[in-house]
Image (cartoon, rainbow, N blue to C red):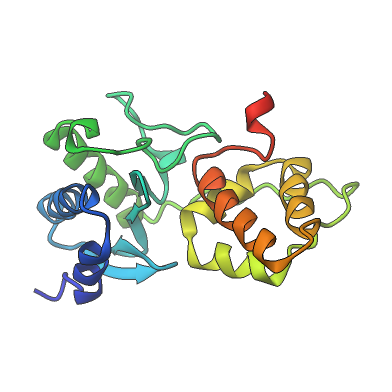
Length: 202
């Protein structure tokens, strides 16, 4: 039973009612895929590891997400992976069990993701911003949010320099702390969904 972590039980218990059956089902599929996968918590979300991270769960106000750590390196014979920069998680937004691929399909993908770790295949290094761009200064209050939410951090890092700057400027231009906190809350939801600051006008 050491592949289970009580903190994941707590995470699911504290999630919204719609999310509980989704998270429980995905957790069960991971363990059906391989008894080698062990649970842990990273960035305040459940992760499943063996020889490094393999996949992870997350619950939000209106949807859940399920991601593969090395999704960009995975084969996608069933066309279920959303690898575009404007998607949340590896298989998109999950609002009900009906949004999930068939169990046998998802189990095969989990096993494939685990195989990458067993083969020692490393994720591709992140592309650094070009030198001619001024380094973006991210306020500590936003860094704390990013450090606590891996999926939001992952999406934010996919944005271009100018798109990141638009969000930071929006926070910094707030006249009061209450306004800034409201903007941070809104931005966290938008970024997690892959939305840029001015997505409504695109």
